[in-house]
Image (cartoon, rainbow, N blue to C red; front, side):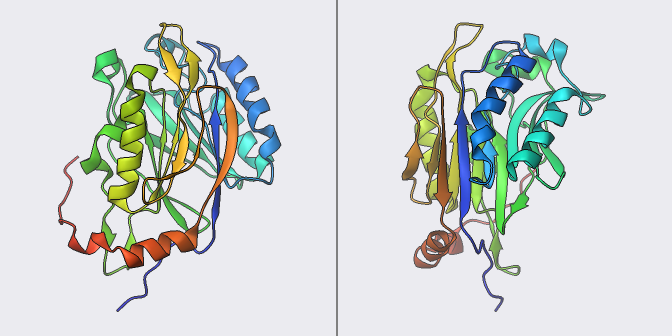
Amino acid sequence: MPVETGPQRDLRIALVQGDTIWHDPAGNRRMYGDMIAPLAGDADLVLLPETFTSGFSNEALADAETMDGPTVAWIREQAAKLGAVVSGSVQIRTPEGVFNRLLWASPDGGLRHYDKRHLFRMAREHERYAAGREPITVALHGWRIRPLVCYDLRFPVFIRNRHDAAAARFDYDLLLFVANWPAPRRHAWRTLLRARAIENLCYVAGVNRVGTDGNGHAYAGDSLLADFLGMPLVELDDRPGVVVATASASALAEHRTRFPAHLDADHFALEL
């Protein structure tokens, strides 16, 4: 019987909730850079909102950058300065189209990305952006992490955390969402983040923006880190702010041992 594997140390997660400036990439890089600068040495993972250089705008795709553009260079620079992973999503142009792409920049210079799979048709995102296909799993200090973007939160089958008995491990230990989730649907945001944590026996981090965008949509923030019981360890209000919270490796392991609901889970294959 293989020994169950999982994270061996706690993880410090910084939630960065800003009032993203409409269609101003350079201004947003300066603003978010100032917000995260004090985190050097105090966080392992720094999370920025969805489309943090422009706001959630179909029109912004006309100015979408490439992977050789200033924002990718900036996020890599920030990761090196902070000694932490820095992650958030931006519009990225490729030969296949413009993606709402989550960037995962490591302090050692590594860079991975996830392209938003579920495009928000109510805002016609699916008509203008290309959809991603596969989820990714990234490793950080022994934690297996599944980063996703905003509307993905509503699709639990795509998100489902499966347990590999042969490898004695879960798909992931931390699920994270970067978002531009409007205030009128804040109850859904708060409820679904908690539900994803409970059903997947994992921590969940969700980072949203605040303020009002160029389309007149208001955002209530409500960024949080929830534990495996869906209980918020920290939760922001509707103002800009930065907070660091700790996900406990030992508490997660104890919960999975005490409440092994994964042993009764249904087995399935996901067609993408």
